[in-house]
Image (cartoon, rainbow, N blue to C red; front, top):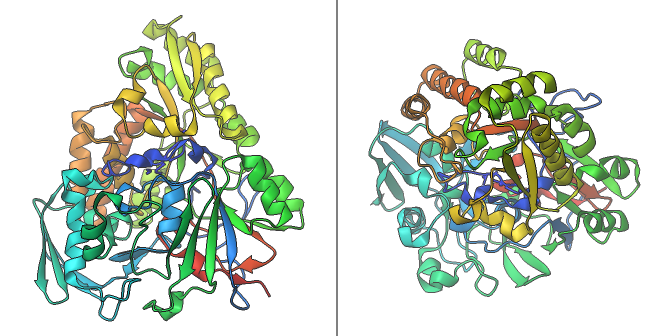
Length: 559
């Protein structure tokens, strides 16, 4: 997410920790266009009719480009890393700002602005900052910049969407000329992983101090260390990045002199722009256009790794959905296979969990196999669902489904869930919101008043189920319905404290068992990341990591 988020997620993606995944979630309604996650292993798999072959990397670029254009479904409200947890800002920011670690397209993590790191005690992380790195204004990266950037997530005044990631942090200190030490109140197995995503972003301390509350807006932009620098931002139209010739990493030096992001909210307009060549490419291709773009001559449609699940978030536990039997009944009555076929272009799989299978890749083999095998497969059974709902005595009660008319996929999903509600005896009412108002469902509790369900495409920012399940802990920002289960919370705490793979996976598995029994969110389906490349360009690595990895730097001229 995101991430209706993340996540943060159009229908948002998200997370709290993020509150973190706040916006994430956020992900805005547009997120709905978002593609889902691919289940299975972390690597590519053979294609089938419903699950196309995943591409690790598109053909290598044959040369450099002066520029290329890229579409996003919405304009960012900000490119401030502390406020970015949605698809539009993150896919831009990933090419401009960098984190201490890097989340790679194969969903592994590696050093980045931190040349190395150590965990000398269970509650201490020490980062050695890479020498020779410069910000876009030419000033050198120092430990002080890292300290200022990380501490900003601890400042309530900054209202960082990643604040929850830092919930266990007691201090961030410079402990050497190029060394930063983070001290935790208790062991947190996920903290270091998150420093490969938004929480680990490093900005110039001087820029943060000078820009203040204007940081990240169209006039100020950002001043980071990535392969592209902020160029210009024309509100309502486009945002341009310029190649940074002083970039420290020769392997990721930008092949294009500039990249222009154009904001195209209408999915038909985006597809037409692909076909005409007006726009060279874009992530999150409208699912209704898959067949059209595959058969056309304007370019190539690719699919890649994902960690996203399309879910219906239960936002009101005081109404009929407060009964777990009713939540299960609604899921049983929802034709999820039909949604994949009609709404996701036939590309995807019914989701039986809130996380994709590839998030378990670091678990011991026997544990991973057992966890995946035990996931309950709730069948499509309208008759059984109706009987289950009848036991709960909710017949005739109203449920409100929030949606946003961002594309046909969103409409199809919402209608299918409404039909399921009718099938079990409820009275569904669909409330259509603007993309902007939909996004506030992920950030403002008041916006969720009177809403029972809303859609999210929730991606994770690390390769770990804890990213999702931690979002549902009691009191977490992205626990939008206020669901609470002491046993679940305890399992999440154990997962957070366990660094050994076996113990960590076992605790995550217990959290998953409870979540899939109680269903605070209803998993619908997953589908791979989608990206379209026009005939001029190539080189990208299709993966959900595009939200944090400098993917645009690898795009060059097609041979």
